[in-house]
Image (cartoon, rainbow, N blue to C red; front, side):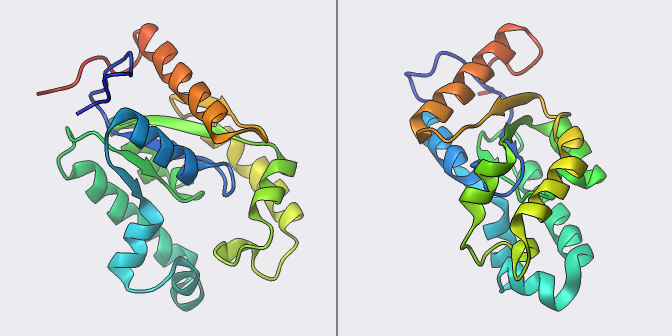
Length: 193
């Protein structure tokens, strides 16, 4: 059941996309609380299914196998009661996979949290949960990922620029962007009973 304080209704799950450090998990959790719907972190679902961490999956099986598992998990999340509203936070590479991108664009309202390089570096430094940044120059890797992936992320239904600001301010921007999207008649309108 959607929160009574929200001025719009949804009939699709919301999928958060963007680079690591953009705020997909923290904003996704806050959004789910605001909307009164469940929050799911696809990386946590992958870890539960695999019985090991994302970092371990990358090191033991490689990125290609991780992407296959990720695709299956996201497909399951969107197919299991697709009328069930939820907010799903995806890993930074999920939307880059063409099959995953096609699936989420078809079955969900996609929101790209777009952050600049300095903010991403600040938010991802000193974390050992980012396989691509382990033992590496995070600024150069993130810069390369921005160059490679921002054009693809721009295919999301909604883009919200994130800044070094409070969670509440970014959440307000996301809610406003969803409302604007719905008012333009290009998105989701009424909940299904």
